Length: 263
Image (cartoon, rainbow, N blue to C red; front, top):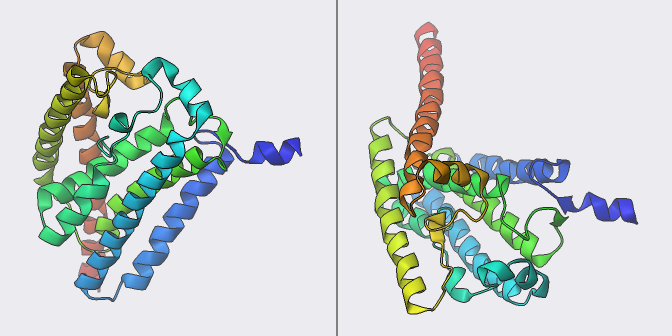
């Protein structure tokens, strides 16, 4: 019985984590194959529908979290559960809202955000989960909600390219960075408003006020011990990440060009 219980314990990069991640990647691959020859409108509708389902699931997960007494105990130092602190305003959660808008409006800056930044934010959250989401059974509602939502955000961002709705270019990188900076400023303002009003004295969307023990942000905070400003090094990390991704696309295109030349 003990071994069976241990099987469901999920930690970053343990076998269960990797298995769940691969299952979501397989879901994306199967959906891409099924939609490969479908009209663009159908592919758009499929992705928007996935985001809507994730958005609805997000609030179901948060409702379950509001009833989770263990979670409230674990997070008591940060004020416990508070609906004002559980809105979809984190770096990754925003993608659920922005991707449908980007797809329907064919807005490249928002697509850049959805493809580059949304999945990166979700992957960082999965690699460094907050208190209450590391080392617990996947069968707990809060674990299913947290990991299900974040893995869906990852594959929805990647689906922009996999479904043939977006082809990133190096010229997109400044747009993605600018979009992130503007969103971060707006969210920081929301944090300050929620704290000032008393609606949520510990509001910390985008982790722009407190690091909450995140090791990478702790490092940046040691360099720049000022709320919001300590996020500046993240721009450099993001630019390197996007450049590496774009280099991968460049290599693939170069190989395709070589093969086409030989044909």
